[in-house]
Length: 377
Image: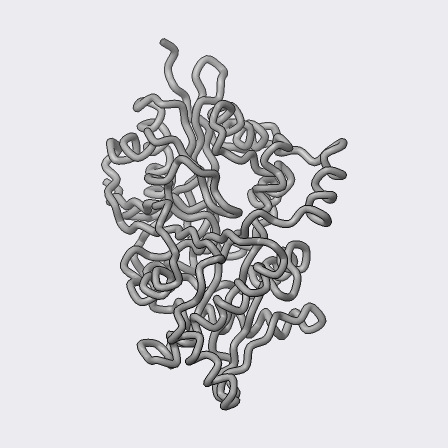
C-alpha cells in the first residue's frame, strides 16, 4: 500500500480539497449536515481570529487521494492569559485508518513544537469561541448550528495517539412545551412588579450598543471558565454581522437588575434545518430555495450559544432568577413563532450551577463533546 504523505495547505485548490473531504467521508451518514462552502471558505481565510493567532492546515494523501486533514494553531490571546505554552489542533477528519491519524497528529505536533509549544489541546476549529470538541456521544441526531459531527471511531483513534481527556462539554436538548417551575415564575413576576427586573429584546437600531452589553456580560460571566479567551472587538463586529443576518430582535434577551445590565442570552436559528439538502452550495439555484426557507419556513429549532449572568450575582437567588428570566423570555418568543425545540450548548461538564438550571427547566443532555490534551515530546 502506498505511503501516506502529509503536506501543508498552500493554495485555493488545496483549501478546496480540505473542505471537500468531509463530503466524501460522510456521504452515507444521514445525520451529517453539509456546511455551506462559502461560509467555510470565509472561516478559513477571513476570520478575525487571525488577528491574534496563526494556523496551518494539513492534508494527508495516499496515491494522490486526500484521505485526512487537521489544523494546528497558536492563539496569542490564550498564551497571554495562561502562559502555558499550549497550542491547539482542529478540523480533524480522516478515513478510519490508525496510520492516517498518526501521520496527521505527528504533523500538527511538529508544527507546534517548532514554534515553542510544549502541549497540545483540541479539537478547536479554530478557537474555544468557535466549534469546540469532538463528538463522542449522541451520533443519532444531526448537530445544531456551529456544532460538530464526527464518526464514532474517531475517539479511539485520537486516544491511540496519546491524547487524553482534558474536559467534556455537554449539549442539552430542551422541549419548550415543558413549563417553567412555578416557584421561579413567581419570583420573576415579583421582581418585575417591584421594578428590580426589566427584560427586553435586542435592538437592531442600537445593535452596537447592545452588542457591547452582551459581550461585556459574556466576558464577565465566563471569565473564570476553563480555557476562557475573551472576544476581541473584531470578533464582536463579525458576530454583529451574523446576528444582523440571521436573527430577529426577539432571538436575544437582555435583563437589567436594579438598573444595571446583569444577564443576557443569544439564540440562533438552526439553519442546518434549512441547508441539510443543499450539498454545501448556494449557486446557481439553491439561493432561491435557501431564501424561501429563511423567509417563509419556521425554524425547526434554535441553539443557545451564549448566555451569562454577571459574576456579582453568582450563587445568589437573584442570579438564578436572572438566568431563568432570560431563558424564559426567548423561549416565550420562539413558542409564539411555532418553534418548540432548542439546544443549549455547550456547557462545561463541571459547571454544575448552570447544569442544574437547565435540568430544572427539563433540559436533557443528549450529546457529549470531548476536548483532549497531550504533552508534546
